Image (tube, rainbow, N blue to C red):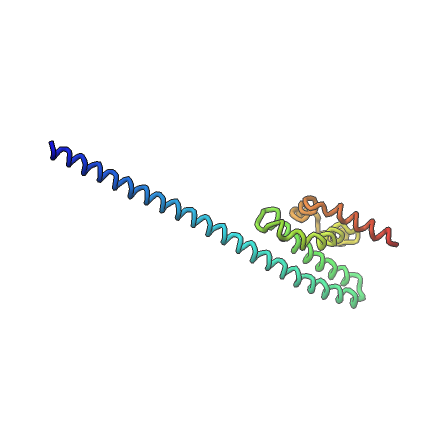
Length: 174
């Protein structure tokens, strides 16, 4: 009887030891998954911030380039050459903001982080975008429909309302 009891006790101990090893393995596995998820989330935040910094940097470069176009336009005498420069300038401006809008709409960059910095510049982009003397009236190749994300961002951020408020404020000053 003692041999049977000892064998049964050894089997129970072995089963308990195996169960403890499996529980420890499961805990280590779940902790590893948690660390992987935290690392992924941290990397995503880092890349979003880096992308945000790059966008702000590129927007500053865009302003410089647009000022260069403005200087060339002022020096140019030919209407056709001026129209070409305006079209190039508008295409550059709208292309940048279309890319920017796509990043926001597709949630690649955090809208909350960037909204305060870009809301006012978007009002001026809105003005150029719907200006009756803009690229869409000068060029047969340009179409507002090509800028889906930008138009969507105008609606989402209510840029038209902000533009109208600013326009009315400036008009009332005069």
